[in-house]
Image 1 (cartoon, rainbow, N blue to C red):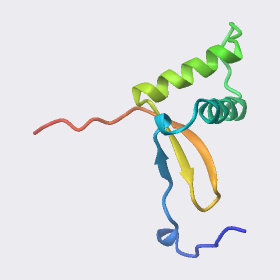
Image 2 (cartoon, rainbow, N blue to C red):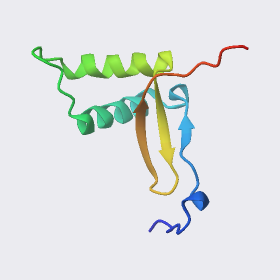
Image 3 (cartoon, helix red, strand yellow):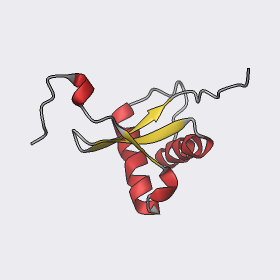
Image 4 (cartoon, rainbow, N blue to C red):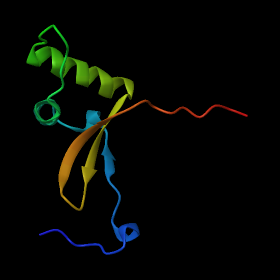
Length: 89
């Protein structure tokens, strides 16, 4: 059972897991789980499962997506979003 945190500030934050730290089988499993949960509509064309896996892997490699571990729920997810790069003054 997970701990209940009355104050969300007490909740431990998710931890980023570098995709390169996972074994190939574990990484594929995380990506496949993400793809199956997403249920994304790819438009008029059907895209194969392996192509979707390759696309997510490329996003991870480019830093456009991150693997996150939530210590409270003990779950892993992929978060997709633009990487913000800090620019100098």
